[in-house]
Length: 155
Image 1 (cartoon, rainbow, N blue to C red):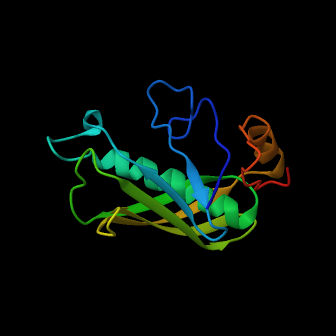
Image 2: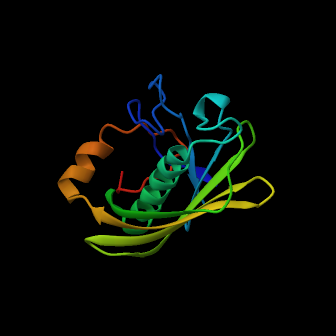
């Protein structure tokens, strides 16, 4: 698994965003995976990570999966999440996204949230809308790349 680029500002992957999740996304070339141990301050009810956190992490992971498949950035057009069971704080969360199709305008992506043992807590499907090549380059120019980072946009 190789890491994807990240940013300083993003709410999900931003290294310098004090309110963000600081997630690192990795890929095997087919799917995108993030691993994260959500702290108690991400709870809705006691002992339950807020559903919005699961949606946020699914959305970002799935967006990167669309980008991986099509070599351009995407924004969410539609996201449907099915919550199966409450996710507890302070255990490892694994979020996975895989693009089923990715064309020049729309990508269809699937995702899931599970724990490190493989128990599934949520599943998702989404339609993602491609950014223009110009907008993709503009954002890509602001991303942080390291020597082992996967280049998605011809960098």
